Picture 1 (cartoon, rainbow, N blue to C red):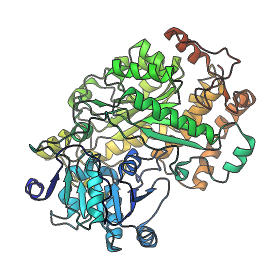
Picture 2 (tube, rainbow, N blue to C red):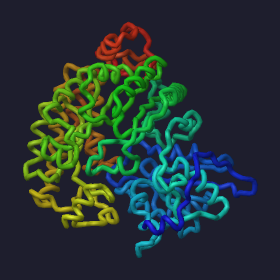
Picture 3 (tube, rainbow, N blue to C red):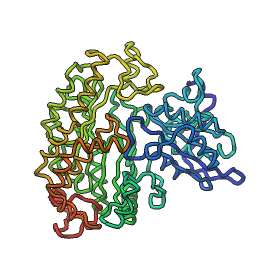
Picture 4 (cartoon, rainbow, N blue to C red):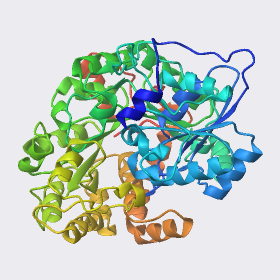
Length: 568
């Protein structure tokens, strides 16, 4: 692989912007992200929008997200021919790469060149290019972050001169990362986002007539920084984005939020932002500064972010999260066993602090998504029930469970390979959700599978959902509805519920919980969501007052975000 790179890579001398040159073919480009196999995402991937923005003028870019618009190989081949597509870009993570390869094969068979990128292809370029003896799936690969290389890829494709490998390296051969200080302005206000509207098409006309700000509902990815210094053994982030943190300017992020907020208002809809930074608070001082600027600019929107538990001890930071619109925090807890955490280089997680952190979030009406990994070296049979016993002592949230997975080029993969414990070294080529690819130390593979199934079944059973909703009787009905709907959706990560019939079954199984929240306060909840007149909750007002911000009285119009939680 290193020999191949040295012969055919493109080295960019400096950051630049490429424009379509006179005489170049004007391309119709398709950017495609395959579905994630397990369940349909609620949020599209940022890379498609970013590369669309970075495409040189004169070319047209179309987007297909397989989660929002399912498409098979035959339909894809027909689409690229009918639409006269001249280049297809495909990005995929490891769990999606088998589907990505199949789609790429169909596109290339239709006579259209394919360029592939993303974390998996960066670590396995020979696999995509067919240089390891397998079939060739791509005409070219983009290694690492493609901010700089994408314009050159388009220019080369327009001339019919695609290289095999593109990677951003300086004149000394060192990988170069974009600083993010000149981050492009993604034109959210004019982009076609119809395929990313979560509101069913059949309901949209009715909701527009009724009003209340729910004609559209979208979750939009936004990044404020890249990189992570932690280097957890199982994670690909440090290997792909590096261990040095690069941030966008606060002004750039705030401007993006304001434009998203304006679009939601113009559509009489909802816009939730997911900050996709691997650790949104990796520099707490900087994140506080950003949140203060969001509040000062009245750029609050409901947002979700990933933040490690060790960074959620700061009371002022928690108040800023609440006051700036933070509603969901994803926390990679991974295990309640300190020995397990130490074994994967995540000893900064302190299980004894989990409960207090989650209570502090709940006190501010911030929901927690807590992830756990089974199959670690110190796990034994019964780990699921031991974990659930702890979870039951915490405020209700959304626990998710997975199995330790050796992703290519991670320290975990290398360690397990060296120890001879990999059972499926190329597990991604025949992806099986929730299936081990190595032998655990203290349980069998079958026992690990049973543990993750047990955890999902007992966390998302009708009884567990009803208990979670009933335990929140002191919360406003909007908070309880959010927990209920989220639990019903999240159970689909493990239990298939893709079609209408599956959803009808889920609703029937949980009718008691659904009826209870409607009975307890549907009328009051609706009154809190009058068109663009949404009242901040008591928790929000308390957070803003602690921070010294002026807060509107309970009966005043609150324009920070349509759909803000109703009064407690």
